[in-house]
Length: 78
Image 1 (cartoon, one colour):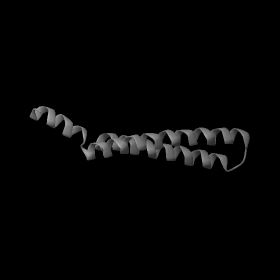
Image 2 (cartoon, rainbow, N blue to C red):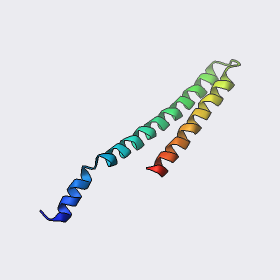
Image 3 (cartoon, one colour):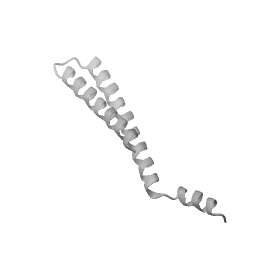
């Protein structure tokens, strides 16, 4: 084997690269989950019209925004 081939093979087994990719995928799934939560709270607010719905909607939107910022930071820093 040539040194170039060995460098390519050793690059595939870089543990930190896989940890970074796994964390990026994990945060992406968490972001999608936060968007699902926003949708569910919106649907719940349409069915149950109470005084608590605006507070829950605000909390779910703030949560989704925080996770979106976290996702952007992970993409930038990794």
